[in-house]
Length: 411
Image (cartoon, rainbow, N blue to C red; front, top):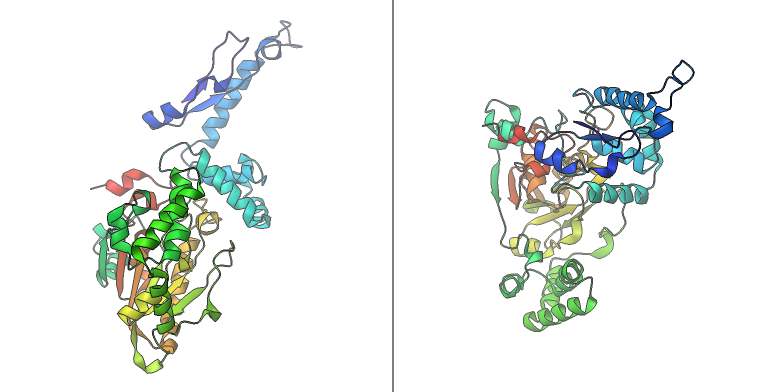
């Protein structure tokens, strides 16, 4: 729907009417345009020297442009890529459509800070609840189709691989608990969350989200937690020492970089090749592929109590991991490929740490875990999966740049 504003050809502007509400409620694309007015748009001498109607010609040009650029064939291009191209000065909308190579080369020259700033701006300007700036896409390689369709097609390789696994999918007791910390939450987590994690992560997030980043609030909550739960920090430290974990190989996750695919491996006791311990690979939660890090959870306590080898790792997120143009230029899913590479490395090398390659469990972020369970490329890399909160059946797991939400609910 193309809006042409009124004003008797004398005054007016496209932005006098916000098209977002109509677009959302009517599920349509709304275009508003400016055109020349007054003497700039309609002065005429009555002959070929000043024929007039320039404002009408402006309107026609806008209509022609809309019919060309906004055609169904062109709309397969990612609007996120168009926005990103503009925000980081890598060209015009036309360049993003027609000069992909130049745009790609330009984006590759941008610093991580510039791209992260642009990503934040894109998320803030989306204007629609649950619009994903980044997310998984159907690339025909690691993700062959939407999960719902895969699970309905019992003859597909993806379905066969999924059925070959032992899978647990569900929500956790603490899911979303950062937004509702209360006495029960503190009781239920006192043995599992160290004081350092609770005070250094959860309390700060609570203060930032609800109390304008007031440090007095986070300090007060932290103090109460210390009083009620005593030596949780010492418990974690004892587990770390007992598990014989050394800090020499610890990955620093505070640096933002595309060069982030590193693994932490926690072995209970000394690594002995002949022990053949079960292996658990943690995929960290990511707020729908936008943030997170592998060492946000210390695997030493689980390794000790479960007598298992625990692996966690980083993978690319945000624009670095999931930018896509819905064509061969930016295919997307780079973060998922990082995850698969980590799974492959563990399969090929964990035996040197005493791990059993026939008993590997992938667990953690539900979206990532379930996406990996429906990719037949992963056959043989793991045998079990635990999706802890969320899963790939949610449409929000996928980039809204590509998603036709009707594809999720076809039956």
